[in-house]
Image (tube, rainbow, N blue to C red; front, side, top):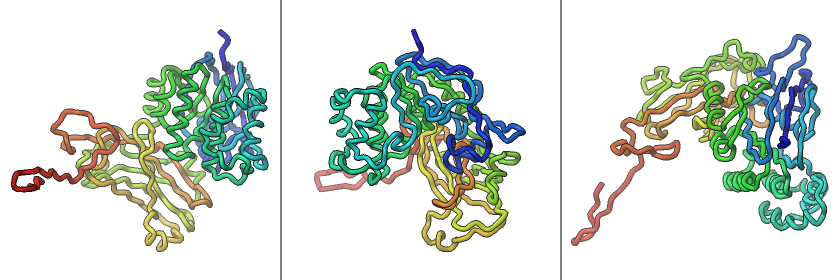
Length: 422
């Protein structure tokens, strides 16, 4: 059987300072610089010696840390950029969703862009018309069909872009982490549609940091690291490999000698630690005690508008929450500028809040909509022990990442009226 996708010794090289074609944000460029080997002449390999075959009907997950080369691979496969070496052969019509509105013309209406994208995919007008109503219903933009898409909100743009990519019968569907832009309900809708596409025998290549979605939707996966494939095989084993090698250090993380720390100047991350209720470093904590996450950093100069925050995710990479040290309006007003010096930002997670299991901590330092100084989404991991947690008298595994101690009342009806049992 002819592979739907055949990648042979694929490589892509960029000169530092000219990365816009592969990594558009400052954070992406810093991440790429820190994780991919740099040559002496100022060139870096975003991809190097990548090889794999994808049979028709396969749903392949692509996972790896930021800057590992995932998006560069997809851009080569959908012909957005050319490889420096090697080749990628595609057998079939490709539908791609690499970023919001890929392939849309901003001056054209939603209706016109549906037909334009269909034509780009090689479909006849009659084929597009047969799917038109389904696309519009999925995107929920019927009343705005005649409006130029440049006036759409990012959510409307995304809904229509995904609807076109998924409904115009592509034989191969390439999807990047763009689904993270939409709201929760739309993400569920998109994942459901991707599942339908896969069950219909189409070939899907899905890039995501959401390990739950990867496990649910894909049967094979590759793990990318520093521009190369470090593992290829069944999805469950790929996720385990990724989390074991790229899921952060346990209990404490030190960025000494990390190129990304130097690139973040004047911000410099020093260490991230998880502390138990006694203030001691720990990688395993009881759910019945409070947990403190401490981020230590140094500023070589004053930074206006700096906020420092953390991301918490399950061991499978599913986001739980993000929180920043200037979320409180009063503190935000008191610290318009963070002066040069050494700092520790601490976040306190309440007792009786997290369920037993493993968790990932990420960190971020940025000036909102001005500059991202530093980000490490999977910096550190820790585990929670459920001994003594609410309901632990029953030996059942509670579903979900949270296990709060909530107040309950039991109201018993008696002959004389109501009796409260507390």
